[in-house]
Image (cartoon, rainbow, N blue to C red; front, side, top):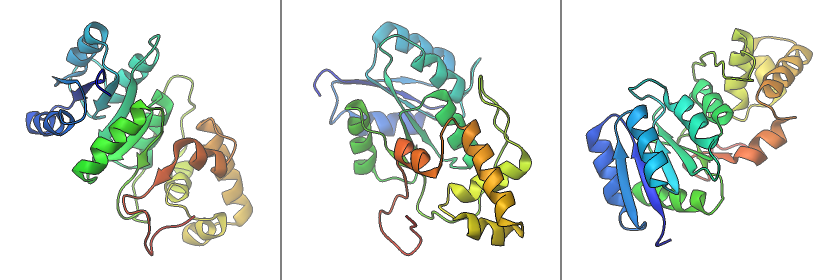
Amino acid sequence: MQALGVLVVDRHPVIRYALSSLLDTRVAWTAEAATSDEAWNVVRNSCPGVVVLELELEGTTSGADLCQQVKAMENSPRVVVFTGDTSPGAVVAAISAGADSFLHKSVGSAELVDAVVRTHLGQRMWILGKNERDHIDVRSVTSDGLPAITRREEEVLSLVLRRYTNEEIAGELSLAPQTIKNQVSSALRKLGVSGRRELFRKYSFQASVATGAGARG
């Protein structure tokens, strides 16, 4: 781990300082960037092993676009999205941009550092937040090569990401089970996965609390 460098990208200086201070205890060096343009320059010139990235950035490109740009590089660094936005829209944006891990800003300091190290080693860490079944408002996401998700698919996907079954989704939205099945299949196809098992296996979605009444397998 001595050779590992980490770039922290966030528009808030206090957050950048806090993350850099935490990571300095486990990595060889850290760098900071406040905008997507600054971050891109650091990535090209300093070659960090991991980029810790907020989706909402100032600059010519968004955090998701920067992620996609970084992951398109040869021998690209790992990218950990570290954000307060865990809506399905944000998750889909991170997935389609090629993010390696996704962490909600409610994670503890030790958990964050561990996730960065594990991501560098090739593991995926997708921690969406403490309450897995909270209602979430989904935003439409359109990325290169990813068809736009419809409003109904947004509603369905918001429940899929909270581990609802098709039957539970049908009851929640007062729709026929077959209709829900079709909507789920369409939304997952647009994410580039064949089904729920591949979705959760590939991205290892989990709550911040590993066990609890709200968790669903």
